[in-house]
Length: 251
Image (tube, rainbow, N blue to C red):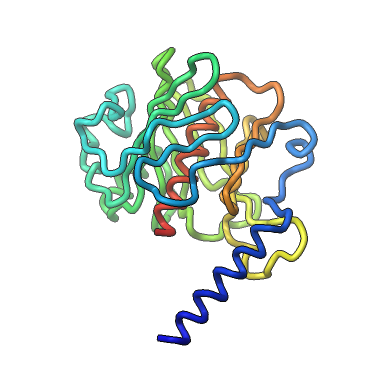
């Protein structure tokens, strides 16, 4: 008992030291030189009535454990239409409204910890032929134009192969943004055990980086300069979803 307490205190001290040193996820040069890096607020402390903010973006209170009747399960989304309602049995589910500048708004619904049967259903919906053990998926409905984007991240807790896509976001117009896991940290005094794990994701449109999310420490959201407001809202929505998912897993 005493030994466990000592180990816990040591780990807390180590995390405190690490948090106090300037560190972050490794970004491609194009994002480093031409982007806005927005620190995340709302991840630490009590998770009751949790609200996530970064820059001019803010969420509603995060709703955990929504059901089929929840507003965000729009029939505009293939993933959340009534014919695929079985995925509402997922053990990890949450939803929120993502607000942005100039009255931008999106309704976001997320699913994780699916059963094997639901994973097979998700494979069919996204037309994915590869095998995976877990996935994180959901929908982002842009309120102003009723466009719905659907996303999937494959095996989010496993180290991916080098420069292989970890998932994507797509809309009904076949516009697709790919996600690539970031597993490298840069800065001083980074413990080796932190290198190699998924620390964030890079967003690429037509092969070019347009943003990123850091899940490391308190987190950051990164927007490439001059991307469209819609792409910013989509990246903000999925970034928030990934930040909340990580916090749920850590609880």
